[in-house]
Image (cartoon, rainbow, N blue to C red):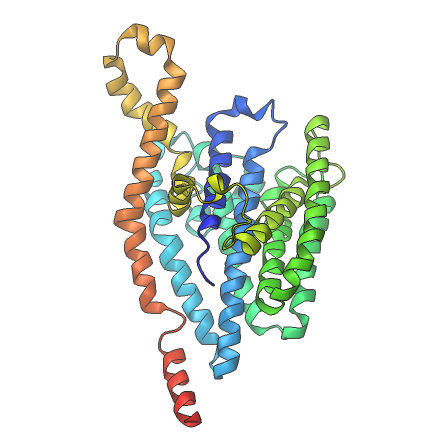
Length: 373
């Protein structure tokens, strides 16, 4: 799948919504606007779209060149491991090392975080302070465990139906579990977000000519979703349509719009979608998401403890919240950038050694080409 820089801007917006919720809870308008939930759902839809698009493209190549699909599965998991695991495991082991300072149960619940099953821990025990946001990473990994097998091995004529079933499972499971505390952290209640992204990827791969026909329909659905979002915010509850389904529909509309217009002069709001700052934040968004909930605690134990007392009392006492917010922002950006430059990028470069077009594809394409000459 070709790189679309505007999707990095969408990633940046998604992570900023999550950070806004955790850092400035008063901005949540008394919890009426679910910033964080919407941000996470955007990530899920993007994952469903991008991962499915990669798998669809490599399925087509495998079938065209008679390549074993298990080779694609192997490459997929190697590449996902190199992208996701390094800074995640570095983070949780650091949290374990300094567990006494985190104010969490990371030590007793470490096995859940080690195995990417922390969402089940939170479902049983509730949120656990600064490590609570890791539930969504567990859901993503569980999605990766099952999705390649479905996309690559289900009969192609049934793919649309299977993806649609996953969307329905996600929607109806949320109705079924309505009232059950912490139900939204369970993987199957997230299937609608992943499935909607996958459905868009299916259209983009197998029926790109239908995208323009799909766009008016998803636009209407997005408008209706906004109406239900407003109703839910006013009533402070989500009765008619789950908030995840609502935000997922809006995310699908946005991604569809970008796919259709990213290379044209008709792209609106270019100051947002083509914004270099947002694109940069999108590139380091994994680190921003992983570290953001830890930063205030790090600040409190280091900067606010040893450096801030050196500030003039009149400055610190009058602008405490603003100073801490500025420090948190600088600290998060610095750590996420350093993480990307010195850790993530090294592993991203290593991924190229396990490219989908390497080995099997190159050898087979040469053989096929030679046979045709």
